[in-house]
Length: 246
Ligand code: HEM
Ligand SMILES: *[C@@H]1O[C@H](CO)[C@@H](O)[C@H](O)[C@H]1NC(C)=O
Ligand SMILES: *[C@@H]1O[C@H](CO)[C@@H](O)[C@H](O)[C@H]1NC(C)=O
Image 1 (tube, helix red, strand yellow):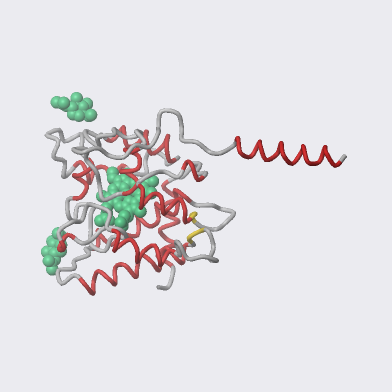
Image 2 (cartoon, protein in one colour; image 1 turned 180 degrees about the vertical axis):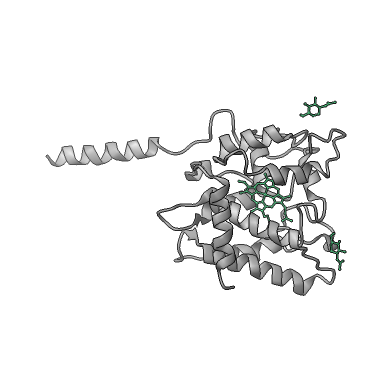
């Protein structure tokens, strides 16, 4: 009886160990190589690092964005048409139907002042992950703060976004967040929350968000599973983020 119980415990432990999540076949994470093109968007970069998008980040077209965001992240194919058209408008590939990831850093096309993890263009680099900018956002998200919830709530995400914009307004003498830039800022926080939303926990898992920004990796190993998201879901999240009194 007692031996059976112990055996049972041992076997259930074995089963759990065997269920450790893995990366999808053919989509192993690999760091970008020298000469690869990358974006200020942590999600585009992560998708390239997993080989969903071309690993070199080059010659990306609209059908590719639509199928990749559907297949890898569960977004309906109409969600990212507008933002992709904005990227194609500043393409440097020589083919107006394709763009390189770095093209998306073109200031005030999609890229804007007051990013969560990038510096403003006034300071010279609006493209690469900036640890000092991120550390403030991560603290506001409650990342690495023990004892707090494991997810980022809508309220927390909304306050962190607004606080970063206020930081940028204070420190950047040439600060210029246009109406389109502000809309993009709300959109980015909202698409992040939508992509990772855990209905039961009422937020986006901090660990998924942390590895997206810090490692430009999709948190498969931490248990991420794609949901299914419509444009209406995203619009409703934008409304919820904008409704928070910050
Ligand atoms: C699941 C879909 C997506 C998610 C979760 C996502 C997430 C994010 C996040 C969190 C940021 C803010 C980065 C920061 O403030 O430091 C961002 C920025 C950006 N995203 Fe994405 N993104 C998605 C899709 C896209 C697509 C489809 C495009 C273009 C084709 C795009 C282009 C950009 C650009 C250009 C920025 C830089 C804006 C800036 O901070 O100045 N994103 N994205
Ligand atoms: C430009 O890109 C589109 C979309 O990927 C492709 O179908 C077309 O063949 C390309 N045109 C040239 C001239 O390479
Ligand atoms: C802010 O940026 C927009 C778009 O690039 C530009 O049209 C506008 O003149 C800028 N405003 C200031 C005060 O520089």
